[in-house]
Image (tube, rainbow, N blue to C red; front, side, top):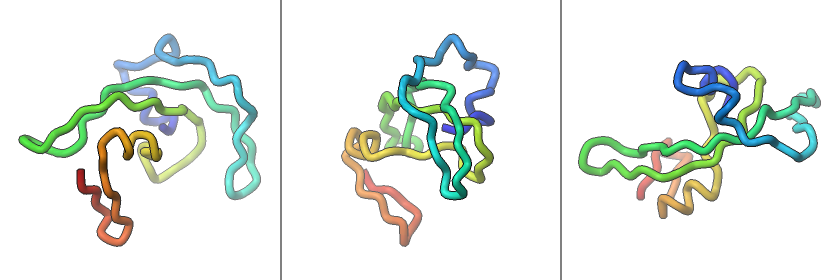
Length: 91
């Protein structure tokens, strides 16, 4: 999860679990220190096909066009099949 999404009014630094790992290195070689982890209940789908799961996000402060990146564990918890060709996910 990127910092600009984390900084919504309902979340603050008290919701973060400390990150004890090393700094992350981006594709451009820049290093960034993650703020920590946050656990959130995230709904996927709409109306009658909605499924909500608890997702652990690592919060990082770096520029991105994305809001967040869903990892393999969240996709596995959804029992989902992602398709990059169709930009969709079936669960």
